[in-house]
Length: 76
Image 1 (cartoon, one colour):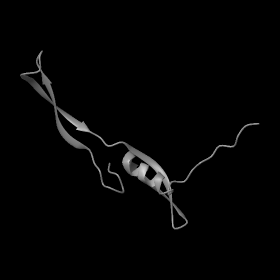
Image 2 (cartoon, helix red, strand yellow):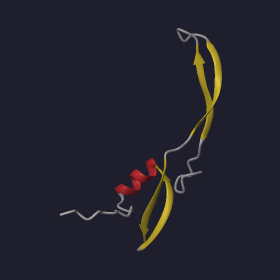
Image 3 (cartoon, one colour):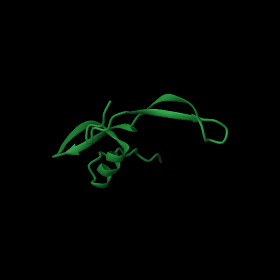
């Protein structure tokens, strides 16, 4: 899956396992690093829209006040 704003996607690489003091490489293991994706509802031009965004874009959307806020009623 990708972020629908910045198109960030999972990245591939190697996890390097070293020997005791860390000088020699013992083995490499395939590793997939996934982006922190969240489901949010944004308000754009007066219309609600559901998106899947990464945490970095969510932070930016909150700063621009585009994320729909859900408030729970206070219990008396």
